[in-house]
Image (cartoon, rainbow, N blue to C red):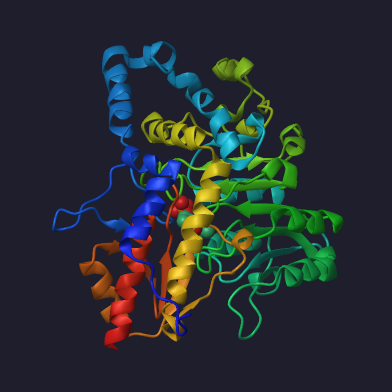
Length: 428
Ligand SMILES: *Cc1c(COP(=O)(O)O)cnc(C)c1O
């Protein structure tokens, strides 16, 4: 028996894990960026901008050809008619987040969708005026929530409550969230959490939060920016009221890709819900009556929240990307993701005290990402990772967010990353 700290696995064992995993083959369907030396980068920023599926350029070229050849007739005569473009991937999109097809729509971008959904679902009244969220929140979400509060004549200092981890702890306790709702629920109009916190990587128990919120008469919405394409979500069954997500992170659909929105079936059927309307949210039966159609008749389901006809070129990559998720299936990807992130955790454990993982240790309470606080000099860590071809995200002063994604990262990527940290740690 040898004692002492565990040792980093060797390269051959990491490569063996890659060879044995049937989902490793999906990496070949992506463009992997190259470093200055011509080698493939070790890309851990799929939580920020996912890599490009190789099928995307041809799919875009096809839409351009149809536009050139058909002009306006492309709305109905294109290979994938633009008028009903969304029909192509509605089912796939629904599977990605565990929704009924009628509960989702792709439209706008994430922050826009949060606003549009809050128009319908944040309606402070009487003494029920608060929004409860988590801290730290992504700035765009905070701005959106603060401005919604002000729009309704409220004061964010009292009406926006962002629950922070306890002193000395790095992420929220499930019980603290549920107890806060239980205690203050009568004053809370909307509970709006992320599915996975962008900073700590904590995944929230959506089903439990939805139940606690509903028991107190609150609406529960979720920002899935870091959860869609990362967790095996079950939005419908969890009874989430509404959700929105971007498609360019784990969704691999390109910079600024069109975002998703989810509205639970029971709300989608309710034409009386106040909303900001546009012609694309109107019932298709009467949409093209144009000036003859004087009153807005909302489309049943999430599509009733659409405003404009969709930007086809920004929708095309979504279809190409969702096809890969469907082929691999989200539950299988999630299992592989747990193996990859578990491996990252095991490797990091060999570094001892020089790093601290601030993400939950329970695999069900996190997604692909680990957030790692390091003790070495930040610029030394940064330089070393960069020269080793590792692309990670630094959050000053001392946190790196590392997200091995199951569609294109490898066990070898993970080992290489930890080796770099080990070398910097050994020097300092
Ligand atoms: C990435 C991200 C956003 C980005 O918003 P956009 O409207 O797509 O620019 C917003 N909120 C969260 C939580 C995010 O992670």
